[in-house]
Length: 133
Ligand SMILES: [Zn+2]
Image 1 (cartoon, rainbow, N blue to C red):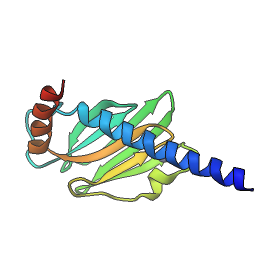
Image 2: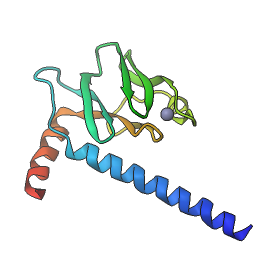
Image 3: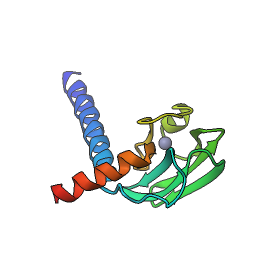
């Protein structure tokens, strides 16, 4: 019994570390910003790479298929949510809508991160990233 508890704890730590790693890799890819569209952008990162960035104020649906699975992200009425996903836990869909800065939807099984980012922030972080290299 005790051994099983320890293994569960280790799995939780591993999941948390993976999440931190993904967010960090995703941040390193900042700077991929469209030429127009002030204010908030929606950025989707899959497996540590920027899948795309779209303005938050334009409704659209984005399908993301990776080798890990399928996600459908909806941008509607200034908010973002995961409409569909075939991940085993379904947690990303249950996270609901996000609509302001620094909010994030994460699909851990698919290594997918949906973030709302500010153009200005993205540019600043790009500068910091260059120094870090
Ligand atoms: Zn998911």
